[in-house]
Image (cartoon, helix red, strand yellow):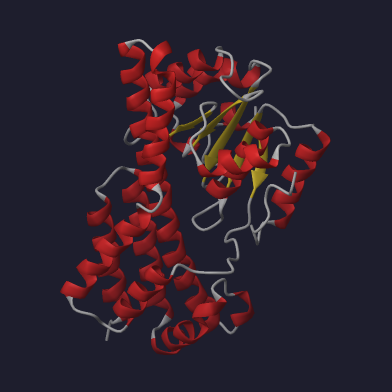
Length: 328
């Protein structure tokens, strides 16, 4: 199989370690992948999960990356934190055999928002999981995760920001507009365009989910179908949320580029294609304003993680960034 992490840059140590484990067939049962916004932890977890599920088959790897897989389960907090009931569902499901792949993979986003009770409900699965189960926990930092969880996982610490070869032109078009002091109408339209970016591919995902349900219709009870439909909706919402967080990560990464350029280290920038725009802002906006803009991006990521309406979260972010960058 081609290397699972091809195209991911800036996280060489982490991806080489994971690839070596895949190549040697020595993966473990639980991982904690830690990294801030822009680190690429979600993409790394997706590729690693697809590799675990495909068992060396290139076509199956591609399909697992691009379409929903019955043995890949994505979990996010139900609001501010994980509910004990959510974790108990995972524990119960982990006892069931895989449907298609040789194993089942559970990706637990925002594991740092798992409280003591939820963590306690999860401990046995982390300590003594079924042989065909792999859990991948994601978090901003290792220290933010309860010790009872992280001590049972192999920790993969990512670099602060993954260098990226290309940027989304819509995202950077919006950034160029707000950095030049656009009016509210343009700003609100920009937020709407970013929401549309976050929906790319979701229609295909929903069609694939419906196709899979139709294939299984002869074997599903009405109750089971409704439960799968709910699970599918949660997966669509989770994928859009991850795309929204990716958009915010691009915004934050570019603002960081402006800051490091201002500090005299332009060789550290991530978005080389935006070098002219970056230099313009770096030479006209002071460091405190850039830090305020970065804080606005961080606040947007928090709002999105807490299920604030995407349009509102992005509008607030763009308004706050414009105010910071255009401050007199």
